[in-house]
Amino acid sequence: MSGKYDDMLHLPHPTSARHPRMPIAERAAIFSPFAALSGHAGAIAETARLTDQKMELDEDTKAELDRRQAVLLEHIAEQPEVTVTWFQPDERKDGGAYFTTTGRLKKINEMNRVLILLDGTSIPLEDVADLESNCFQNLF
Image (cartoon, rainbow, N blue to C red; front, side, top):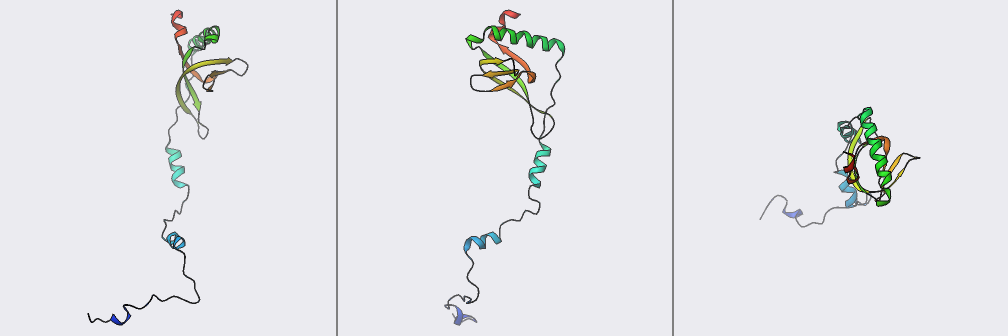
């Protein structure tokens, strides 16, 4: 092999006496992607996230929910299983989402107007859209 650079082939890599060698971690940072608009992708995702509007219940539905709440209060010692559909307001934007939760009823705090399940779930009564339980079979 007789080439133009054969005389340099086995020489050590030159190092500078004035500038120390950069650590590998810092060298890797040079090639990392640059996000000119940090947080912009998150803001777009938040804007694109959809929320539901809270439905206004009519007077008949409110009266029915009050009746069901009274029945649950009568059976509170039995810790009946209830399925609650409720609205949870969104913390960041207008609207929120509807959730359906099933669990055993621990108590109804009438002072704070909160329904509390055994698992610790606390649901404001003003946000309840529907209540279902075996206790209601005699109502219909």
